Structures are given as structure tokens and as C-alpha cells.
Image (tube, rainbow, N blue to C red; front, side):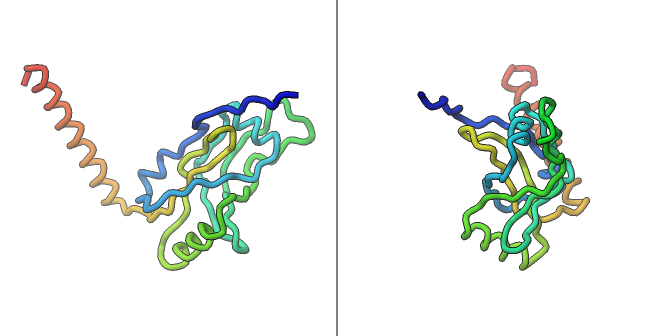
Length: 161
């Protein structure tokens, strides 16, 4: 029997756009997730939410809390709990490095996106520091200024400005 062809590339299932607004991302890591069969089927259908999700260290491992994967529609009594805690699969060196950084200062682990990479479910987690409200306002003002500059440059390029 021939093996089933593996899907290639990266297919994003869910992304946490608010995380980049609320946190300054210092470093990112790619981690696998320990999932059940119905969770994978639900993810393949493109159903997941990272709102209120966070990662935490417990017993020398990293766990993802608060990620919502809805129950699989065709699932039976074997269906999963939507907001269960899921173990993240990282290298031992990455885990020890993350735990050291989390203990030293006010840093946290925030999931940035969930995706399939060559058929495997992955989550991108970011080592993040919370932004103050004035930092957020500065970012918004900078983005507005950049947009205005691009608009003027576009007009000038077309000979209107």
C-alpha cells in the first residue's frame, strides 16, 4: 500500500493579532502540540481561537492554556474538551532557556499563531513584554504617520502632488 502524500507548505489556522498590539515580542519559537484526533480534525477545518490564550511553565514543561478548539462536528463520545490545557513540544534546551527568561523578569509567553507546517500542527509562541498604554499610542501614531507618508509618496509618484 502506497503512503498517503504529505501536504507541503504552511497553512495558517488562527492568528492572535491583538498580541502584537498588547505586547512587545522579543523572541519567537515554533512548538508542536500534543493533540487528540478530533482536535486535529477541527483544526484542519480551520476552527480555532487564540483569544485569552497563554503559555505557562509547569513541572519543567510548557503548557498552552485557554486556546479554544471547538468540538469536531462529526465527533462522537470521543470528542475533546474545547479549552483543555495542551502540552507544547519543544527541545529540552529551548524549554530551559524559556524557563530561565520567564523567571528573570516580567516576561510572558503568548501564542501568536496556529498553523500546519508540512502536515504537522504547530503553534508560534512569542516571548513577550507587556506594553504600557502610552507605548500603544506611540505605535498607533507612528503607523498613521507612515501611512500618510506612503500616501503622499504615492501621489507624488503619479504626478499629482
